[in-house]
Length: 282
Image (cartoon, rainbow, N blue to C red):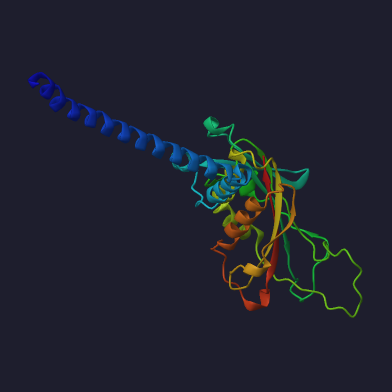
């Protein structure tokens, strides 16, 4: 009897211990199965293609919205880009050749700014017709003229050509009674100098899109108006021609043009000048 009492006394705790462990195991197993089932249901209801496209779109917009930073700032501080003006007796045309001072960045996309077209009035108040602005050849221009600039191109030839023609862009016949829009005067050298101050920002607009393969080489032609007070009319800025086929780059260029400052204040009689400028990206 004593032996039987001993066995009964110490058998019950062991049985209770095994039962508690089994219950805990089944609870954990059931919780894991429920969690896995819920995860499968949630993932099955997600449209991954739409989510993936939305993520890519938001990421591209975020990248293009970043503030442009000068890429060649250190290089420009060490050695300024120099371009030379060469003249000849055969004609008034000029070529500006840029010296390659940053060979390390040769593979990077470059920008060429060309073709400033300014439409203005003569002193009599009538539109000028078929007038080509040409620089007179002076003694100083017979030698090498060196001007400093903060980086546009480093390894491309640059042809600087300015033309103005009041009736150049009229594509429809205008009746005699129709009132012609008249444009004021603005010095082309001043326009080029002010645009040059934002050339790094404009190049950055293109480089951001080119870095992700969103755009190829091409050009953008922008039109804007400058008042006699030296301010750009925001509503006049528009893209008149472009083969980049990238609205983000075009909008970035328009925003940069809107921030141009430094135009001289002229007399009110000079009127509002209309500028057409072409940016070439390689």
